[in-house]
Length: 136
Image (tube, rainbow, N blue to C red; front, side, top):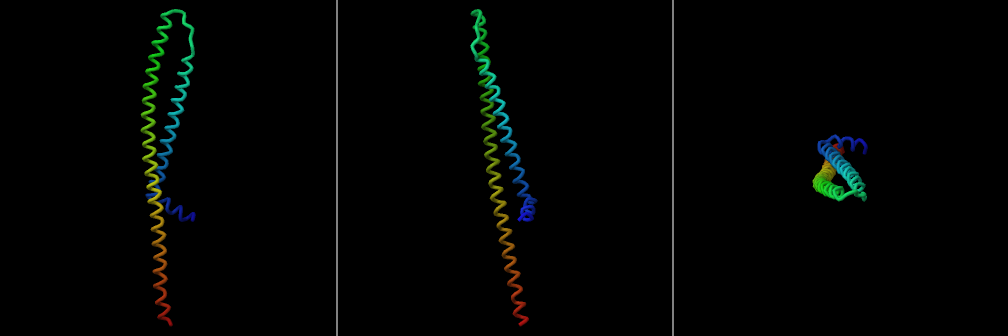
């Protein structure tokens, strides 16, 4: 079984499968890293939102303007992050579909090869039987 597995992991189909699987894992890792990155940014923004005592009306107006600008920037970043996340998820789904297809094809190829070996063995046995009859 081990030799059989090693033999078929050397095939082009198996190598392509493992390559696609590795790509999928890399994409999933990138998605996780981006999610953590934006979570940290979100936490930093939540820390900024704590109430601040205002000394004057001007300070209050500046704080509101600054908060509005930061909010708009965060909304833009969130939109970009959402779009990137959607694209990465689509890419991950496509790669997963390709991996499943390669698995299925690999299994079918293995089954076909096993079946051809069984047929070959039967043909060999049927060729040996006439020799036995001739000897009698």
